[in-house]
Structure formats: structure tokens, C-alpha cells
Length: 98
Image (cartoon, rainbow, N blue to C red):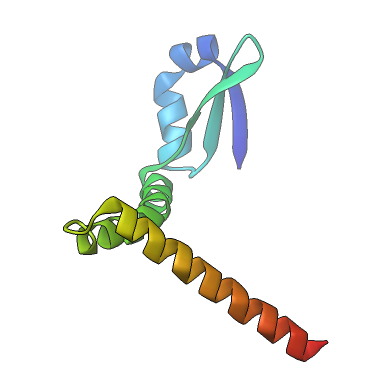
């Protein structure tokens, strides 16, 4: 469940806030002057979010590692060629359906 509280209330009831998040698995949005500024979430949810965030970048890191010794202009051309090839294949596939 998502709960909201002011920053002042969060300071005053910090131990309770931690309990709600840790034991109750609640998410608490802390607001300052009525505007949300942070969300307090449990570690399990944080780890899932961090893993989901990092996954796409891991692919980029692998691609970058494979192309580290290549000239940037050559990599850019290879990428442009690959994109053109995929787009041409999609166009051909959509023409077959029509």
C-alpha cells in the first residue's frame, strides 16, 4: 500500500515509518509543502528496481566492450547499416501481410 506523509511527520515518526516500510511492505511518499520529494521503499523492492534499471545498460556495456578496439566512425556505420537492414526486413514483412 502507498502512504503519504509530510517531511515533518516523517522526522517525528521515523522509527514508525521504517516499520511500515520494512515489516508492512508499504511504500511511503514523503512530501514537502504538499509536493512529493522522496519515496521510501523496502530493500527487496529497491533491489528489484535496481536490477531492472541495470539490465539494459549491461547490454550496452557488452556491446561497448566488443567494439572497444574499433574506430567510432566504423561502429556508427555498422549500427546504421544494421538499423537499415532491420527496417527493410520489417517493411518487406508488412508488405507480405497486405
